[in-house]
Image 1: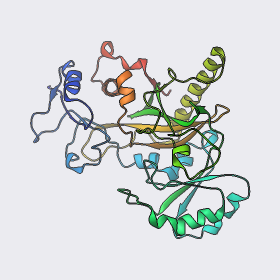
Image 2: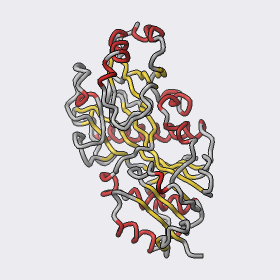
Image 3: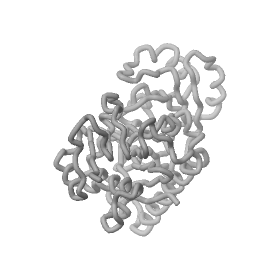
Image 4: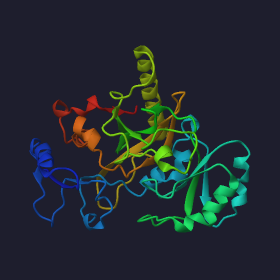
Length: 338
């Protein structure tokens, strides 16, 4: 049987894709009238329904259950425990007085649209009147761009004691795969920072308090290689080990709280998908999950040093019996949750 592939990608080079599959004696799909053995849509093309007509042996599109995982309102259901902040779900138009009690203590809260991305619509508040004014007045002026569902929000406890990297607030972006009944995560994490040095004030300046992997972020830095703090080498080693243990624990909890395998779309046999977990580190080196998402962006930093595409393909093909063990290299970077 001839094994065929179809990869639709905005940022992967065609020569790179061809090299990976042809080394394994796979052929590129030659006719649009047939279905490929393996079908891949990157995150830039994943919502283009023109490509959804293809059915395949393996596709990187999980069924609708994935929305349960990535919906910010469900974070407490899929995670809970010590790895998340206080979290409340809010519907625009409801009685906001029910949230007055959360301001009785000196806490700050971050408001996020549940279907949001790229920091659009995010607001930090410390008083009930600020929350009320934002949801009733200021929100009318927000440009939500392509975000369609803007009436459902998360009110999330704001981390006011973050660990800093180069004097900037940051989070770790951890890529992980759901393949059949298994979860794997990539053991190199992107460091995504804010644009400006951290200050415990001026909460409306997103360049201070909003960490993202974009043109304003510290670029090309990966945990643990590039992670340095003002500690002795031995202390730093222990801190890195502790962070890695917590990351493993986060995904172990996740695996226990979701139903695997996640169902495929009708017509597909097997599926997988790559996600990203955005994780904050507090000054006491405790981890807090901000969200799980499947808008993973273009991980060029990771790809240049640790080819994410090739490694995830190895995991997927090996899981579905299409890659012999002697050709399986990804175990160096992907960690399986037992």
